[in-house]
Structure formats: structure tokens, C-alpha cells
Figure 1 (tube, helix red, strand yellow):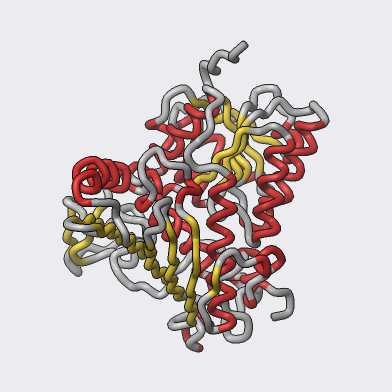
Figure 2 (cartoon, rainbow, N blue to C red; figure 1 turned 90 degrees about the vertical axis):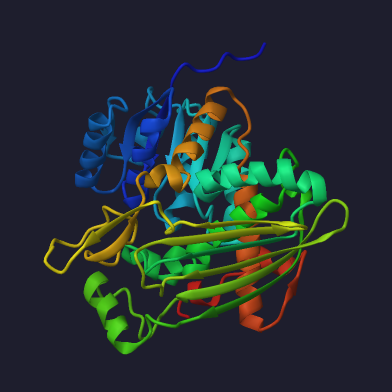
Length: 414
């Protein structure tokens, strides 16, 4: 007998940082969902997020003093793992233990990008989810960006159907650097900008190149070539800035992570055609704010998108002063001049459609289009890029040595 869809999916948040608040804002545009619980290590942060939930009309959110309390709560159907990278496997292990011991009624889990810091961790995340019988979704928001959804639909329907499939995807994402100290620590984050942002770029590019309705594994990775560099934040004055902002644990004079990364990924489609992904990411960009650039090229057509090429712009002269903020665009770098404004960041960046998709799939017990399997595939590409950069050569796939590979900047004592 087919189980009827849940009328409302009751979600519990693990984590209360920057990304958790982005998810909350997006859920205003999602039907059939309530955020009914939250856990993080900080009581103050838990209370703040619970208050925001109620202010946004997303339900009555209870704060939990322990992870196990959240996982075993009677009013939680699905868990959103939004905590730092180095905590995610432990969260998944706790969820697996609670579900398999029948102490938890959770039946679905979604995890922010990247799924894990290494291939071994990512494979264990997938194994735990499947062993516990959990439906699982990988939260890669750029796949659900409104220009990506609309652009891909048009390209494949009107152009690819006439002159042939696309063969080259370019993706770039850059900003001035992360908000929290753990992002800058290679062992905790799993790397630097390649781990933090290239996960977006390679997956949105892979998505654009994949035919609508085709299995995600229909494109095979044949080889990867990666380059990493420290362009800005290892310079003494900037390294000192990081130390002043985040404390002695962020030491870019002695233990830096890369702030620039470049990737070339060679793929093959079902018919043996060669496809390419070119991607760059940077924490060394000084501009209006976060910039995402996408291109998709094929025979006789092209798609282009720049997130800062907005229709709405605001100008403020030197006479207008105010405190530093990000109310116009994420990672905003200036408070004066001519500045682009994203009217609905959560929607444009894909969080609204991403959460709508996950909620509906979990409610109806359907498989999302982005799962932990995709999260694992992304981590395999990232580790291949780190390994390629380390050896200074292209790495051919399959690459069994990646199973236990750890990037140089993530190795303890490196």
C-alpha cells in the first residue's frame, strides 16, 4: 500500500549560522512545511533562530539543548544538516543511531554543500542514510537558481533539440571571503575555496550539461585538472587582518588554505561525445559582492548569466553614510557608489526552489533530483582536483587513490 503524502513536513534544523538563516528566508515561499525544532551548541543562537521562525510564520519552533533531543522529538519528520563541515558526519551518525534504534521517527535528511570533506566521509554519509532507510537530498542551491532552471529548460527544448547537445559549461563564483573562522581552517573545512565554492561550480555545470530527465550518472568523468593558489590572504597585511577578525586559530602566515582555484573537468556522454567543464572560484574578489557567472555553449547557441547584472541598482554618494551591511547583496563590499541589488537573494540563488523541491519530495516519499549520491560524486571531483594540483598533472578517472585522499591543507600538522 502506497503511503499517503504528509500534509505538512516538519523540519528540524541542525545549525544556526549564516546559511541556516538563508534557508529560513527561502521557506517563506515553500508550502506544506514548518520548522518545528532547532539544535546548535549556542543557546543564544538557538533562541534567535526560533524567534525568526515564528516571526516568519513558519511554525512554532522548539529549541533543543542536545542533538539527540532534536532527533528524537515527536514533531520532527526531516532533518536539515546546516552545521559546519567538520560536524556533519557526527550528526549523520547520531541520526543513523537514533533511527535504527527506533528512537527517532525522522524519515528524511537534507545536507548542505559540500556533503563531506573527503571521499571516505561522503561515502559514509551515503551509507548511513541508506542503511537507516532515510530519503536523502543534497542541498546544492545553484542547481535550483531561477536563471539556471529557466535557461536550461529553454536551451534543451529549443536549441539542443535542433542542433545538438551542449558541450561546454563554464561556472565561476567569487567573493571577498567567508563569514566564520572555521571556513578558513583547512582541517575543519576540508580545504579552502576549492572545497567551499568549487562544489557549487562543478555541480551546476554538470547539471546544465545533463539532458533533462537523464540519470545523473549519464555523464562520466574521464579526467580532472586543478590549480590552487594563494593570491591575496597570505599577504602579511591581509593575514594579520584575518587573525584580528577571527583569532589565532586562523593563521594565514603559517597555515593558509587556497583562496583561488581553477578546474577543468573532462566528461563523456552516453554517445561517447567529449564534454568540458571550466570553473574558477575565489575568495580574493573585490567587487559589489558575491558574483556568480555561468555559461553554457553548444552548436549554434549559448547561455550567459551574471548574478551582479541586476535590473535594480542603487546609487549612494559620499554624503550617505551607514554601518557595514549586506542588505543589498551577499558579501557586499561597499556602502557607497552604484551598487547592484538582488531583490530576492534566496530566490535568485536557488534556495526557495531547492527547499520547495526537497519538501515536496520528502512529503511524497519521492527521490530528489539531488541526493547524497550526487554529493559523493561532487566530492570525488573535488578530491581529484586537489590531487591534480598536488602532483601538477591531469588525473584520470576512475582514481582509486582518492578513496582515502586528504588535501594537503586539510592534513593535520600540514
